[in-house]
Length: 519
Image 1 (cartoon, helix red, strand yellow):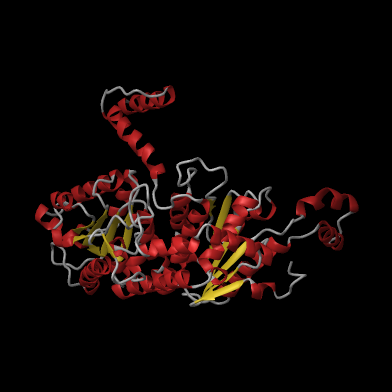
Image 2: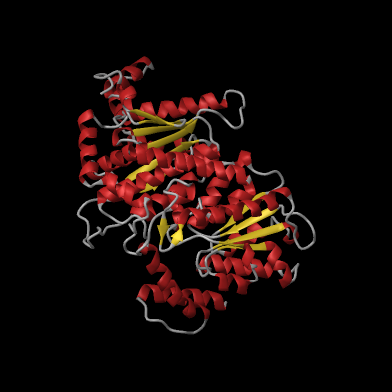
């Protein structure tokens, strides 16, 4: 295709506010894009976008609006949902986050011994952990001096134990993030953290060292958290879309409120682009349609996300939840089982490390795996020629996936290296790269709060578009419920001699645990 059209990259590149998407290395033509845009129009995507931004209850199985965009000030200022003035409510919480985080970053908030806070431990799970943890990691160069952020999510006691080894009760603030304040993993960790804290302090001191992001004022009060230190968010904010809300409190405290605000502003910029641009010029729409092209017409069952910036170490973990918890559905909006593939498996890791692990599969595996390559043009830590070599790999890998290496090229190369004809015949096929493997190149000028906000909002909107085209609900997550329900039924059998009705395998495993525990 590039031989036929040398200007292909120019035609299939979009830019917005310092973010560039080159989607020219895909198996698409002008006709492909025309047909995909027709598909978007056929499913009334424009009307669906408007419905989300104006507060329609598009999360139909939970009868909720979907307004994480309102947290970025990118909705109508007069919008009201169930009697709540959205912009006013968002602004009130944002001001509360600003006031509190400024006390932490300036050192005006003191612990029970009069010392300033030096460590913040965020206790949450899912979106209450993955979002703030990823943002704090990605924006490490922006962290407030002498304030360290830590994240505890796993109910495995090792996660909390290893974290509290690093902190001092006198100078640690715990942020408990749970909308209902009943999430098993979060509350188990929270109560254990409370117990550890009380080994050094009194119950009266809890108010200085524990705050909550929750809607359950009764439960937070019972825990010992003052009402003024409870930060609200709403049922129209889904967990995996909640880092823009008060769930981002740890981000604001660890990076400073101004950087948190720039993060929101970057997302708002992408929101406006998504709302206003025609589909041919709309980055999230194009990304979604190309993904649908591979999933539904090439039967691609996975996509790789490959960030070439070390600060993006947690980005794939975050996007796995945003994408797969949203669109990992097999029932359509009419309650019927779908007859086509929906969400691909999302996986990946930072380059260049990943080049030495799974890139073999990307280049020569039996399945085609579309890839998103993400990088920055400027390094936060310039050092010699590191950045140029990183970018050489970034550009080189996308080209290698596209052009491959033919049998003829392999034979010529091996002849020049002195291989015999029989060796070429025997070894040559293993050195062939079929090429024509698709990738997107996503480039931001530098990784900062604003550009990170844009990038994350871009993926959120890509997910939304896919859900509309696949005719599935993207904003519920019933699939996470059953395993948790069964775990609650099993727990009494692990704690005592209770018997439960179960299958032979599960019962055998429970018995094995009890036998080991008795030893």
